[in-house]
Image (cartoon, rainbow, N blue to C red):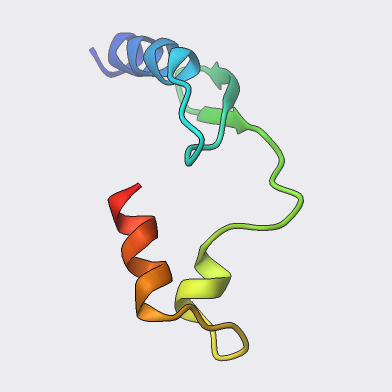
Length: 68
């Protein structure tokens, strides 16, 4: 069941388009290994801005991200 479920979820995620989501390019799976190939993010992700000491978002920016 999990292999079939993974394949279906990958197909759905590959078709989803949203400006705040990274594009799923393809997926790879075998009996013991499952992976997603995601679009490269040249400017990095939000993790740096949300969870590091060197970067800060003001509360309004954080709220805008949550609403989007």
